[in-house]
Amino acid sequence: MRISELSRRSGVSIPTIKYYLRDGLLPPGRATAANQAAYDEEHVRRLRLIRSLIGVRGLSVSATKDVLAAVDANQGDLHLLLGLVLGALPVERSGRPSQSGPEEGSERDAEPVAERDAEPVAERDAGGAVDDVAALTAEMGWQTSPNPPAAQVISETLATMRALGVDYDWRSLVPYAELADRTAQLDLGQLQDAGDPLQQAERALLLTVLLEPALLALRRLAQEHHSALRFRND
Image (cartoon, rainbow, N blue to C red; front, side):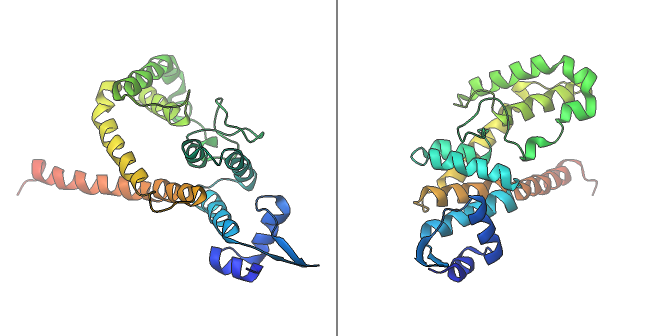
């Protein structure tokens, strides 16, 4: 297909496609003339993934380029590919998974909750919160990478809650973890219809990022319902 058709199919404007080509996010098409090239379905899938990483997940162009480099290096490992796209595994600029921290430009660039809101007290409890996360994942039997960004969020949250006087530990999170486990199974079960790894990665990203506000809203609706059943004065 020509670039005009690629733009129509992917929903990405022609100037943006040319920018991605120049910057190396999108591989070049097959040259058909001096100033023309032909593109295929791989380009469509790649553009849709780029659009999701930048427009949905909120990565910078630079961070997206790093993720795509890692994706290219790990096309044969769907588990690893999904971890890179969803941010469960950070990425180094070399294009290989990193165990050190989130990629530059990601949503985790913001100050940690515990440091922002209650640093002096929460910091003293950080070690206990980290131990709690380890105990929780062990209780659930979850197989996770070392020091995933999500574990840091949980440990910071627990440390902050304790700093504010809320007696909360990993045992309190077990019922929520069980719900999360069922949710994750539902998420991944919806990838079966997308056979191509890039399509599966894009769908996983959309299901994760776009559905999260709706899942939180469902929780609020359920809380209102059960509050009415328990506490409303008729």
